[in-house]
Length: 348
Image (cartoon, rainbow, N blue to C red; front, side, top):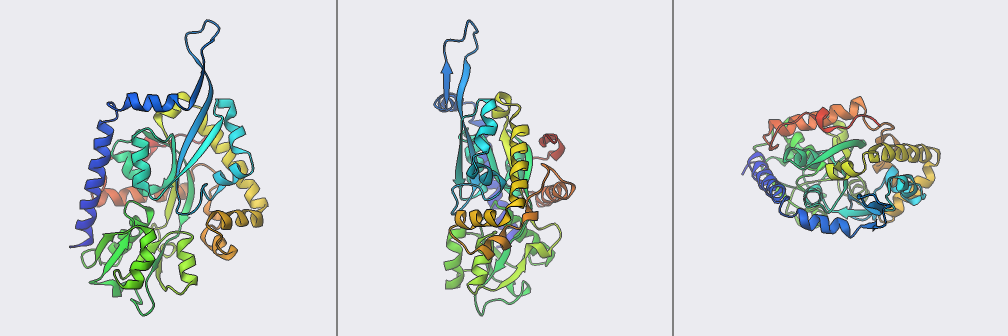
């Protein structure tokens, strides 16, 4: 089975699931409203005003992680420094819950079901979700230039060309997935390898057993495994257009209740980034600890400071985002077409 056919089959199943969930959203709105009521404290003595006053709200933010309990970046740094929650209290938000997810598809499902208000994740699942009808708006790009490491085992393939006829694992629906499919397309191997779904947590053992010939690993994990002797036969940073970007999205529901949220969020993120650059060694200590006590050198290699843009959107970031969207469209992996400008909120 070619990787392209296998890929389309998988995306069709994912998008069908997401679209079905979206169609059921109306039926589950009562349950979602009940869930929201559990995070709101309402003052019933509204001085004659028929609209209840929101006293407290929990902002639920999903992010991608295998180890960390907070995002590795300005958002997590702002929380650690006690700056994030106070910055949002003027909006009526008194608590922020960061909820880790193993991958973008699972985070998309939680956005659909109303279990999340925001999501911080890779461009590929965010684009797929938007094309499937998930009601989100793009409020910034968290990272621009995410690297990926295509690793193999000792005495395994020594080049991408040697992957011909072999099996490659990947966590589908991630920026790593887009990188891998783009790489295979560039190398003319799309029809000559088999791509199989494999969680990142199972990838190392699968490589060591010889179940797969290679696997693309994300920031953190890729650098760590290279230091442990797993050879790298390719990296995303060596290919124009194949590095990933991270995005922040907010549901239209939370924005209807808190239209100032993007502006406040981006302001505190920008302040946190300025502090990070002024205290980079302390930041990398935080990154190392949050990533499971990895060596500082690994933290620096995985999360260079120029990974984090100083503005919500940059020309380079938007070019990469549009390139990824075009690739997905060309491969017929988007349920519908849309203009990123219509999805994107203006710089705030």
